[in-house]
Image (tube, rainbow, N blue to C red; front, side, top):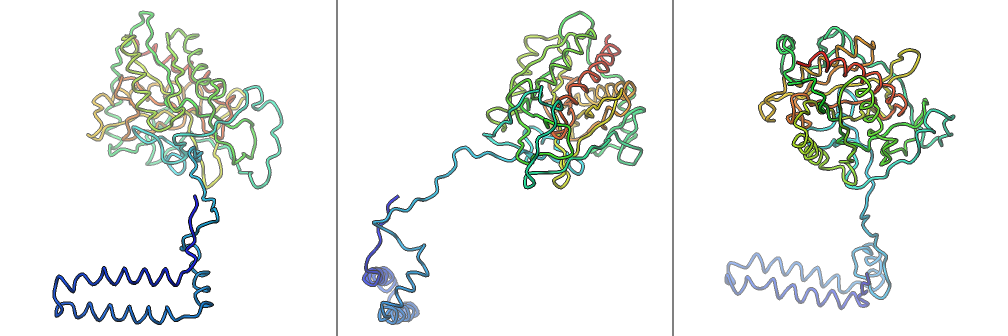
Length: 405
């Protein structure tokens, strides 16, 4: 953009004040001389100030011009103003749970670690994950990672499902929860061979660390559009295991969070509704995600070891209704979550993190068997989450069989 320098600032200022005085004199005509005496006094003071200013030597004017250089219009020279970035790359999202977890916000996306309309995906392939020694990370981009068992413990915050735990973020007390869980979920399952389970992904492009390491690269976005590297790979492993254990399952690989992260839940809801219309036999919808646990810059990897192999811990999110969410059947969702939690924790000790029971929706109003599954965190490797999918798939299949009418 070209802006023109006014070469004689003194003449410019004289012209400016002449116009200003003429404009400001209007109240004299409108209101009368008497009512305008304070105004006349003010104008007189300003004219006196201007008179002194106009008599300043050229050197003083030059000093003032230098002082307010950025506020003066420029001319014959070109100034390169910075162009706005049309495709900003947002930071990875943190989503608030407990102290650090990234549980997505109800009905939409997390504020935290969350990409916006556009973001960069990491590149790589499954074969490189945990197979090779991790590359050296420059010190300025190196962050710490730690492994923790987040399976829960006896406390006033955790309801003991025996086995497994539920962490209660609602206003219900433990007696209320116990009464709800006395009944089995009314899912309407039947062993007729038709598809009963839909696996899908609201945030399909969530991805993982590439290496089993004690450090991570802070430049990582933990996102990938490669379905061999993201949540679609985990969902496919889960679907495969369910089929191997006699459950007819459909797996939708739509990337509802790409290219736009915002509105993912609205788009995934439409996908689920389409499947329910085409396959009325579907009673269970599993939305497969991964968590993102960041503790003051340190990535926390929820890990357990089963049969000598590392497995990412799995967390079920079950929504509740505080009267504002139109979820009349949330109790059945919770009962189904508890059935899976008990089965999986009984089969594989410490595989499960406590159920996250909260006033959030996550499209769980669409069926009585809708749940959100968080496989590990962004600090885990894909290999660890695939292993968890194989283990949890066996337990979920058994829980479904036990609930078939």
